[in-house]
Image (cartoon, rainbow, N blue to C red; front, side, top):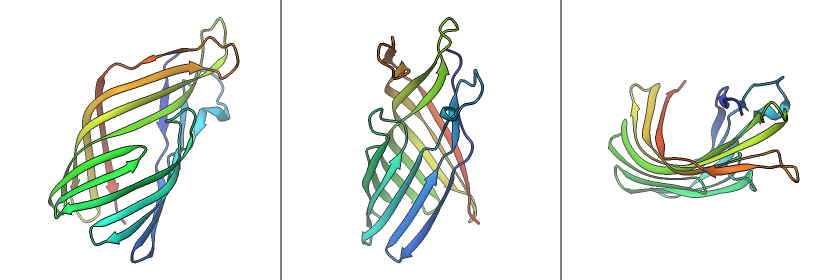
Length: 202
C-alpha cells in the first residue's frame, strides 16, 4: 500500500449548560483518512463525533453519559459513553470514560495540571492495494496509549496541553470487506506517542 494519511480538518463543537447541574456537549472531527492515491471518493472522509451530558451528582462528583461514532472498534462504530469525574480531594482528580479513556490528574494550581492516563484510539483508512490488483481496501488501526501530560492555562483566554508516552499495544488489519479477500493483519510495535494542542476561549 502507499503511505497512509489521516488528516483532521478541524475540531468543531459546542457546549451549553441546560441548568446549573447539567452540561451538554457535542463535537465532530471531520477529516480525510486515505492514502490519497486516486480520485477522492466519499469513503475517504470520516466524521468521528460524540455527544455527552455531564451531570453534577455531588459537589465534587459528576456522571457522564452519551454516545460516540468512530472507527476504533471494527464491529461497533456506534457505542454509548459512560463515565464520571471525581475530585477526590482538592487538586486531585480521577476521570473515567468507558470504553475509551482513564486519567488521574494533579492540579498544583487552578491553571496547571499534571496528568497520567491511558486511552484506546483508532481509525479506518481507505487505501489502494498493490498496483497489480489496483483495488481499494481498508486499513483499520487500533492502539492503546499510556501517557504523561501537562495542562497549562497561560491567560484567561489561552491554554495548551502536551502529552508524551508510548503506544503499548495495538493491531492493524487490511481488508476490503469482501468474501475471499486475502486480508493481512498483525500487531503494532511499541512506539513513541506525542500530542500537543492549544485552546482559545472567546
